[in-house]
Each structure stands twice: as structure tokens, then as C-alpha cells.
Amino acid sequence: MAFDSFQDFFAMGGHASYVWASWGVTGALLIGIVLHARAERRRLLRVLQRRHRRQAATNQTSHRTGGPRHEA
Image (tube, rainbow, N blue to C red):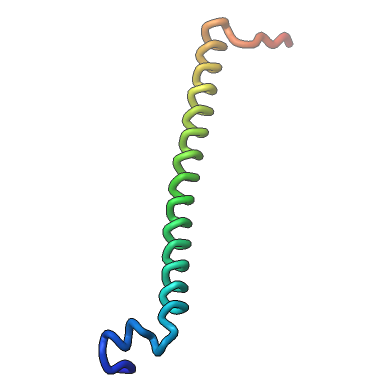
């Protein structure tokens, strides 16, 4: 083991503030990326559901009115 004790491990040879701050920032960024991806996925699913409902409503309306008439 590179350190004699856990206290030495956490002190990181006097560089603990830099080492643990970098771990903290990295962890926070990783959590932020996951949360952002989940939020984007939820937003995309809402947009797709809205688009699907709008398209279904348009199709039902055109079927009730007979739809567009094409003359040959």
C-alpha cells in the first residue's frame, strides 16, 4: 500500500484539498450529465407523445370529413 494509514490516505501527502476537490467536481459533473440526459429523454418523449396525439387527431378529423378529394 502506498500510504501507511487511512489518515495518510485522506491527507494525500498534503494535497488533499486538490485531490478531493477534483474527485468531487468529477463526481458532480457525472451526476449532472446523468440528470441532464434523463431530463432530455423525458422532454423528447413528451414532444413525441404530443406529436403522435396531434397526428392521430388530424387523421381522425380527415376520416370523419371524408378526407381530401382528388380529381383525376
